[in-house]
Image (cartoon, rainbow, N blue to C red; front, top):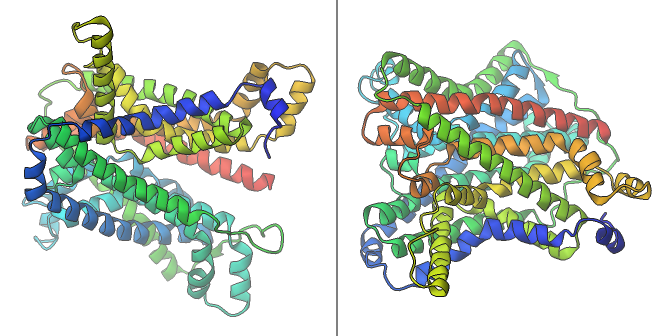
Amino acid sequence: MKLSSRERWRGVSPAPIGIFAALLCTLPAIALIPMAIADGGSHIGHLIDTQLTSYALNSITIVVMTVIGTLLLGVPTAWLTTRYNFPGRGLLSVALPLPLAMPSYIAAYAWLSMTSNGGPFHDLTNGYMPTVSGVAGAAFVFSICLYPYVYLLSRQAFESRGVNSYEAARTLGSSPIKAFWKVSLPLARPAIMAGMALVVMETLADYGTVDFLGTPTFTVGILRAWISLGDPEAAARLALILLVTTLLVFGGERLSRRGQSVAENGGRSKPLQRVSLSSHTALFAILCCTIPVIFGLIAPVWYLAILALETAPVRSPVDALQGTLLVASLSALIAVAVGLGAAYADRTGGWFANVSVRVAHAGYAVPGAVAALGVIALLAAAQSLIDTVFGSVAPLIAGGGIIALLFAYQARFAAAAIGPCESALARIPFTMDRAARSLGASRWAVIRRIHVPLALGGIVTAALLVFVEVMKELPATMILRPLDFETLAVSAHHFASDERLTQAALPSLLLIMLGLPIMILVSWMMSRQQKESAFDE
């Protein structure tokens, strides 16, 4: 249900807000096109002849293996924690999403060291455990760090859909496995595919993991063309290939969910009744739900903590910590403002505002390296316009500095703030808006006194999610940061790239310790919001 045109006219005009959000999220990607077709790119022929096939094969292989790994880790654990009672289920339900606080490149640092000669896992298995490196190693790291995307969306689907159908199948004689396979899994398929799309986009956008483990993908090629070869045109052309690929994944996931119906007959679903497991099956469930947490979080943190305690830092991490907090906090505030404005446009606007917000959602599919190059192209175009209008002047904005970095973060992550804000506003009935306006409240009073307080949970969730994502972002930060600006992610990567993993341990550990309490809070808030929604229904 939307507000009438008269009610929209009396409120804040939503179309400009939606258009601004769409431009913010898509302009850097669009700006790559002139750079990619410009003269230059002298190294692109060499890259096509020698590296492009390798980039493509590595990217495809890692994506396929990662999707399989995240499905095997995310879907069974979501089903077990949703349908069954076993010792520790509540604690594991909170712990399973926490590996999202672990940047995959940091997990790669730890696992390569732990499985190499002299590492604890290598010694514990007498060398039988293979070293985590190459394509298989990258897929393993992505799987243990990204499976929470599949877990969270699958669990939400299992809790809210198919309860009646599953019980009906069990009543008709289906075994639990058959009822899960034939009924619950098909009903949860749209949510699972949404989680898989997020996994694919994050895998394609990664730089630190594949670079460190020696499996160059398109993102590695982009940064090599930009930093090592000094060829922005060649980098832009590789970036366009990566962008088209991720947009196809994003669009394909949206298209696959379009028109799918997951409703059940019979009215309101029954309350979910969990089944208590016997001792042997409970032990199996505990192992299934514990292993991903151990591999994705506990083991890397334990090893990095040991290294950090045993090694004196060569320089203080305070500057990198301050830089991380600065850009993550500012980005979270800006993204929430954009996300809330876009969600308001989607709530109160007509078709044009709605389309603009849908376009803004596509910004999340833009990898960090692509967003960074797009921002550089925009700044270069703006500098050229200034030179044309005012004559040749000293560079004013071509470098960009922190402003350019924040712009790239918004192009990449503002879309991540729109979703939680939209969900929060969707729970506020339009009758409250009309009642407040009929009592003489101004348009800003309705937003300030009704929308913001009632949507506060979604707003805070959006801010925290963007904070964590910006804190972990590596390729955009490496391309755009000022020379005297450091973050924990860049500091850890530089040490690890120089094969000084002991020095990378402290900034890596600080990065995890920043993200862990935030992810615990986000997990708790999302669980509470889901329970409130179920109660309201």
